[in-house]
Image 1 (cartoon, helix red, strand yellow):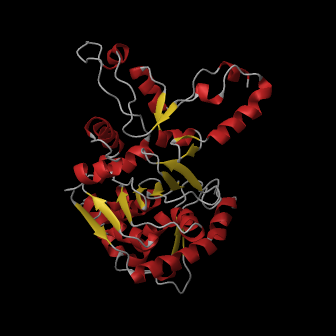
Image 2: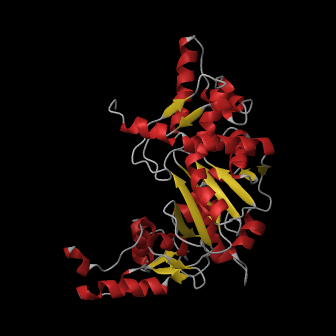
Length: 383
C-alpha cells in the first residue's frame, strides 16, 4: 500500500503508551511475540525470519529494514527506561508527578495474566474462562510444527507458551441461567442471582460424567477451533438421552470448554505437552469447586484457584514493575513470584477424577461427531 514506504514505527497499544511516557521504543517479549516470531534461545525476534522478510520486501526499495520499525524486545527485569518530564505531564498536568520513575517492559493481557496467576514456570499454565476462554501452557520445548489452532507467545521472561483460544464460553450458559431466573420470577419468587448460579452449578456435579447423552454447542459467534465462521447456540438430545436438570447443567458447563479442548488435544496428543498445574480464573470459576473440577477433568491435570485470580492484568504489570526494582542478583521471575508474592497466597487445588476424565472424553467424542449438526444449523435458511 502507498503508505508503507513512510512507516516510522509499528507497535502495540501498551508499547505506544510506554513510548509516550519514556521515549523508549521497547516492548515486553511476551507481547513482542504477538508482533513477530521469537527465538526463545536468544530472547529476541527470530533473525532468520527477519532476514527473510527484509529479502522479500527488498524489491520495493523501502528506506527501512524490519528491525528499524519494530520495538526492541525486552525480558522481565530489564531496564525499559524511566518516566520523562514529557511523560509525567501527560499523566499529571499539575506537575506534581515527578520524572525519573523506573519503568518495566510493557506487556499485554496475556503476559500480565500469566504473572497475576503465577503461571510463568515451565509445565504450568492458566485458563481464563469468561465470555471467551483460553489456555496458556508454558512449554518445555518448541512444537514440532505450526498449528493454525494454536497461537505461540512467550512468558514475560521469554519461555515459549502455547495458547489455545476459543471465542465462545459462558454466554450461552448465562442465557440458560437467565431462563431459570425468568421461571422463578414467574412463580412469584425473588431471585438472588449468586444463589441461582451456585445452585445450578452445583446441580451439575450430580449429573452423569458423560452428561447422559446430551449435547450442546455454545457458539454465539464463529469458532476457528472447529472451523465455523459464524455460530448457532444449540442444544440437542436423542429420545434415549437422560434429560434431567443435573445432566442439562453439566452439558452446558462441559461445552464451555469443548472448543478449547480441541486445541489442547493437539498439544497433549500430537506434541506430548505435559502440565503439572493449571490455574483457573474468570467467571466460570466463581462458584467454588464446580468449574474448577470440570476443568481438572477436561485437561486431566490439577487445577488451582487463588483468591487473587480475579485481580487480572493491572496487578500483573505491577508485579513485573516490582520485580524490576526488587529482584535480587540472579533471581528469576519464577523464583520471585513463588517466594515473594505467592508464598502465602490462599488457594485451593482439585485433582482430576478418573470417572470425570472418562466422562469428559466421552462427551468430546459426541462433541466432535455432532459438529455436522452445528454446521446444518449455521447453513439453514431459518436465520
